[in-house]
Image 1: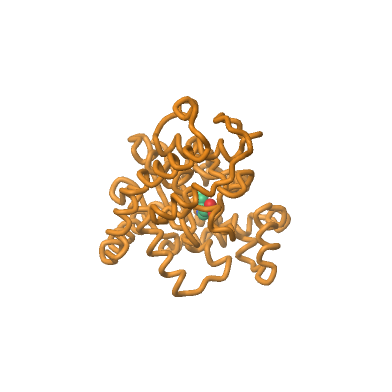
Image 2: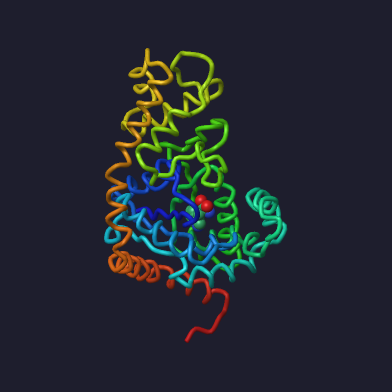
Length: 331
Ligand code: TRP
């Protein structure tokens, strides 16, 4: 049995990139009987950037409903909110004492975010990777599916775990990060050289997985391509077309090669319509399920409570293992 752990922040929108590259892959991992899957809303990470309380609360409900709508199953897997399991904050504190300021200062995401939020470079922003290490290490995790931008955080998690193990013996399982093959790189529709990002100021660059069909079609029709006319998969020279082909391959559930073959002879305009329609169809059942769930607060709470209990049962054991090793008196 392999323990798989991942998390997503309940901030802004869930993009098509998050859907294809992250949560939809989580569902696929959950389907494998050899995996014990734990998925969280990283709502403690979210407040490293200032949040308006009402909007933040709405987002937490919405993202939890999104996870369930994708098909994550609270019985089979563990699907919970990070803030409900106080062991995360506690382990983050302990791990802080085994992490060097210099290491955190060098993290690229910290440097980027410090520039972007120059008026609020708070300690949490700097400590973000340590909290993420706590998330992962609390569950004796084997594998962590993430995007490219998070690989440095997995590296530091491994460094911290090894450091602790060197001092105290086998406390933490040393996890491995991996990039799921499917949909690893969903790029902006307006600038296909850069990743599709929820914080992109240009709304046409990003598909929200909750966009209406008409909006999805409109955004795909405006997608930036190139001045050529051939349909080929060539991310270097044809970034826009290649991005559309990758998205279409996922939406029609076939390989990129087969997709390229199927699309020969289409004009760019027709390809865009085809991708738009395929995405609308892929998202339809998920959007319907989301709409059904999002107002079922009692049901969502019931699921979140179950998730919390399952998560905490594991987390408290690992935390105790570490505290005992440090020398704390346990009651
Ligand atoms: N930092 C991750 C992101 O923004 C989210 C996250 C928080 C996470 N804790 C995690 C991902 C633990 C994997 C494992 O994408």
